[in-house]
Amino acid sequence: MTMRLGNTKIRVRFGFFCVLGLFAYLAPTRAAELMLLAVLIHEIGHLCAMSLCGVRLVAIEIGPFGARMTTDSMRLLTYPCELLIYLAGPLVGLASAGIALLIWGGATADFVMASLGLSAFNLLPVETLDGGSIVYAALSSRWGPMLAARWLRILTWAILPPLFGIAFILLLQEERNISLLITCTYLALIALLL
Image (cartoon, rainbow, N blue to C red):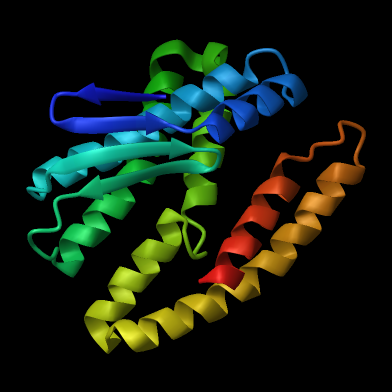
């Protein structure tokens, strides 16, 4: 499905709806809706930071495992701007969880947990996640992109095995939660292909 919002082309891939449907089927009652809201707030954080850095958005593609934003690549971003853009999503997610908790208290516990979980997970220093991009930008500014990429690859493969272990433990528990295992498999496949 493709649409336009101003000068920005927005494309939602079929896989997004498949994952959303699977998540809605496997997740408790409102968990899918609250996670979708947390993801939307997270992405708005990135968009606001991009705007602050003077980046013009050309297209957004929403797929099964997140959104990819295409910008006008007329200029290179500074590493501090990259750090701001990648940090903005998780920080806005953390702030929204805190604000919801302050205003509505325990009534928003499910949203708070979804937003905190999404933010924490995205801050992991794994390639393709915000945390990986943050580590890459920070290390690149100090040691250059080649060494930064090498260290990020090492961090990614140091974090994925324990994450797979946690995913298998969750899978074996009573609720048979498979979402983390699917996400870890996706991250491992992407890391292998990069």
